[in-house]
Amino acid sequence: MLWPALFTLQAVCTSVAHSMQHYPAAWGHYDVCKSQIYTEEGLTWDYMACQPEATDMTKYLRVALDPPNITCGDPPETYCALENPYMCNNECDATTEELAHPPELMFDFEGRNPTTFWQSTSWKKYPKPLQVNITLSWNKTIELTDDIILTFESGRPEQMVLEKSLDYGRTWTPYQFYATDCLDAFTMEPKTVNDLTQRTLLDIICTEDYSRGYVWKNDKTVRFEIKDRFALFAGPRLHNMASLYGQLDTTKNLRDFFTITDLRIKLLKPATGATMVDENNLSRYFYAISDIKVQGRCKCNLHANSCVFDKGKLGCECEHNTTGPDCSRCKRHYHGRAWSVGSYLPIPKGTANICKYISIYNVHVIYNLSHFYTDRANASSLGVANRNQARVCDNAMLRCQNGGTCHHHQRCHCSPGFSGVLCERARCQGPEECDDQLSGRASFHHPPIIQLTFTLVVLLLLIVSLC
Image (cartoon, rainbow, N blue to C red):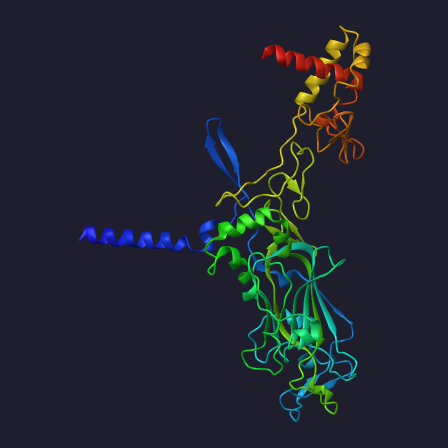
């Protein structure tokens, strides 16, 4: 009896392991930034690439409408149904809570009856276009992880554009065009996401799939398909996430495509349900949105596994000695190598690319050697003779510290907050706020460039002799 049970258990384990190979979960959530491990040197940290969990990002946005007075209810209006011009029982009154339809109702909890929704004024100024810009802002860089879904209470727009910004609304680029007739509206051939390939994934398309005029029970949504684009690299069931991660690691344009700071929904023409607008009953034409879904995560450059919402702002809780809202720079004193984004590869842990602490010990040793040798040789004349050959700074031999860069081998250009020949001194931020370790205290005198040049020559000669 025991052997059949063991075989059954083995079969179950094999089945589970096999199924895990076909789902993204098997490729790692990247939810741990570091863990302690034992090595020959003892207990130490093992660093991994990490990112926050995906979540509903509409909880953290700000919404703005243009024109600002486009919301219905001031003055109160009565609306008629698009499919039945004689059914006019939809009231909008901004002064009555039960009859008001403000913008925040696009993001509230759905499932209640009756449905809550935002609604625009009617097309009472026809034939002037009824156009509305709905801008969603996060004041933070976020990465999209699922489809953007708009659910309309009215008929879906006959013309609409979804736009994105990567610079907090300063510039905008289209994500997708929507129309009942793409050629007529935008002079574009109609396409669907299924027409895209790996090579054309970043193409901006116009689709006619989501612009039907009448309000059908199951046809109220407009989508921007994120997962179908992921599937071009990861497969139909997203089973090959390694391929997608590899592309995201090496193709900046692809990463940027799924990254936003703001979204803008440009509603250009409401549903009319017919070829001609009924000018005698313009209260049939308006926009109404009951729900907007934006699923994503804070962009932390794979240097944080959590993102906090504090005082109305999102910010990454950075690890790996990084800092900034997006963990996009090294912390002070951690410029031992240039900052870099983390990497998804190799799966499942990725590569953390941590910022490294700068030890000032080597800089002190060099300066002490400089004093030692300059007391025993004519450093001035030797320095002048070799000024054109010797190098004050060289990224291969003696790297500028704290993020400084070497300029023509003559001097270090220092990062803000640091100074000195090698950018080794931290500037005082205020009274008694100097870092003693990095500032070297007031009694520490730095040698001139000529002395340092001589020191470099001597050190190189010592290294060669030892080899």
